[in-house]
Length: 414
Image (cartoon, rainbow, N blue to C red):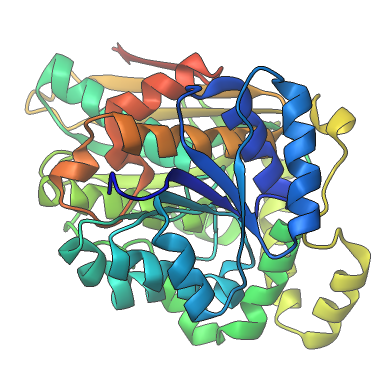
């Protein structure tokens, strides 16, 4: 791809997430990066470039490429770059031509969707083509679902390195969360129920729906009847846990990673990912569980969706920079090592934290993933491309994220 004019193009650069991505590129990525910003409005792109110049006056400004969302325009766009970051959502409405063009032209592709039914559809349609053309396609490499996927991979990798063993159950929790969703995120949640039927959504949200190989037959006990009814679980060292609103999306990606790494042998034949959200007490956990359940049921009704559209941020909008600068998110996880010695059980603990805007973090994920693909040797390359996951960018990606401010800690405990 050395003959292509750009190493990286950010498509949808003037949007809420796109701006955060461009700001991180300008302030943190290598100055010799050949990149461009792309979108439909040249005037908006010119304004963005001027803003970026003020952040780093000594850096060469990105070039501008205008492009529509029709197949021909998108096809011409992806031929100009090695990696394309796509922040134009909702993805289920606008992104299929972009994924198709990248798969056909061998262009690496990154997005931050959380739309699991759409991701499942894209994998079925374009995984084989992308792999044949060695294009790395990674969906959900933002707050959904990069933290869950990377932390799980890190814990498995630590268990393999230090104990030469896989993992059975990995319990993952959103331990601390302060932040508000953007208009794009809210539009996606609302639109999901308009595009896909209940049966399609239910099928896509099954834990192993994206797994590329036969799921493991777990010998582990499933949730108790109480846990199924009320969503609450007590886990030593993690506290009281309840249903996580992003748990289903995270689970499908982590389980896809299970299948991509040595057909499940690296993670272990008994591996299972269990996502939750940390709460203060059992009563709060039950309330959160039912609030999420009834909220999802309400969104099935068209009048409720219509009201929501008028009340929330519009796509391209979001919380102010000042308010989001005080955001914080922390994840904690605990994994049981699949040990052959029942008298000496081991556990792996993991922690990942970010202080600041969650959308800034999403921009960091996108920008650092792009430079990792461009400059580093990753498991994704060894896999030959195709529809992959954040963790397939491996240790080089995680190391870059840590340098950018993402705190991570993984260790063995008795």
